[in-house]
Amino acid sequence: MSADELMGLVAADLDQIAPSEFASFQKVGGGEHPVSVNDEYVVRMPGPWDGPVRVVAVTADSFRLATLEGHLEAGQIEFRATAADLALEFVIESWARSGDRFSDLLYEHVGMAKEVQLHMWTSVLERVVRLSQGALEGGIVVTTRRVEQGPGDGGTGPGRGRSNGRLAELAGRSPSFDPEETKERSDGWHFDDMVEPLPPEPSGAPVERGSWEIARELMRDYQVADPNRVRATYLAGGSLAGRDMLLRVRFAGLPFHIGVRVGEVFEDTRVIGGREARVYGWEYRTLRGHFEQGQMHYEVWKWLDTGAVEFRLHAVSRVADSGPLLFRLGFRFFGRSRQLAFYRQACRRMRRLTESQLETERTAGATAAAA
Figure (cartoon, rainbow, N blue to C red):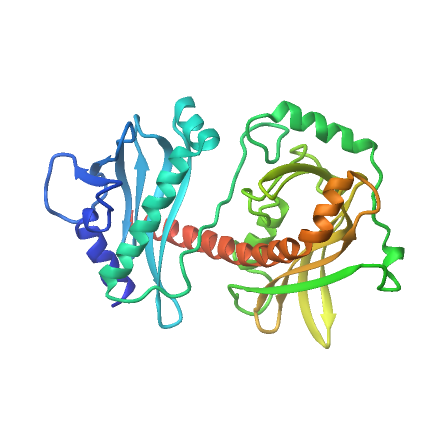
């Protein structure tokens, strides 16, 4: 079936995709018509989770709900279907924060609400597959983008004061990486390059709010890393070049705090093999105390002749020769596989976030035009 047909089935009765053990949708005032703008529902869930919502946007292939007072979360959630390579892609996209302190405790610290939510939306996706009479292809993908509100904080949650104290200490640390050391390409150095295709654009200069611009914005905000694995704290509002970042990394279930410093930030047009490419990127180097030595480059390329857009990652690294011995031993024996997994995840994440932002802006534009 088409994307429009699938969304028509979903919008006709939300309870057919809702797992009864987790949730049911009760329309305020009753009625049998499909989801329409200004409809209100109460999402009935186990425990103190009942959440009132209102339909705020509807298109042929999507609809969006906004939370009302009394909901566990504050935000919006969109359900949409799109055709992709002879298949259908169904997406649940949520922009949300905890609705109050109690909700924040259950979601961010205890993790109870987060687990309930994850299982619920996974079950919804499985039910949508059955409703479409198709088959799941490639598995379910979960991507989280975290945006912090605190001034002067680029990425921590609770415990900001302690993180900001560690961040201030980085100013006195020197880089632990010297590019001259890698010229012989020996002594345990790893050189990694990965390229991830992003949604293409028309040929010529980058399109306003197109794939290249959106990827550049995501990179500036350090959305490359999954915040469930790597959380960055830095002083907001300052220049990206020269920025110190405190990275909170989870390894074997334990959190570690390590420091990096942003070096060159660049945007230029290059000629490669007779072809022009517009390139934006930046790099950072590890600081003393990091269990790894090296440098990371993040770049987004647009080939002006074809419109192809790419996210590129280039990394040079090895185990550090100083810093906490336990961390260095752990990285030496287990870190390489985790490191490569992080690189691959960063590439896929940039593609998914870019696709998601493009689709979000497309549906928002369609809704505004319809209004």
